[in-house]
Image 1 (tube, rainbow, N blue to C red):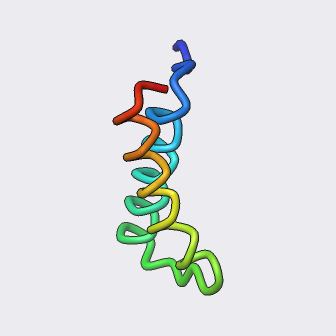
Image 2: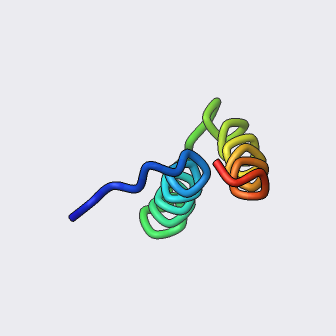
Length: 51
């Protein structure tokens, strides 16, 4: 399996994993719950500018 070199897609993958695990396992991310929306914004911006 190859890991993508695109930072935007990598950030999106991490975001999707966090959201999926949070819903599936009913995790309480506490302080990290602030990180998830920020990560989504960063991923969106990086994908839009093509990085």
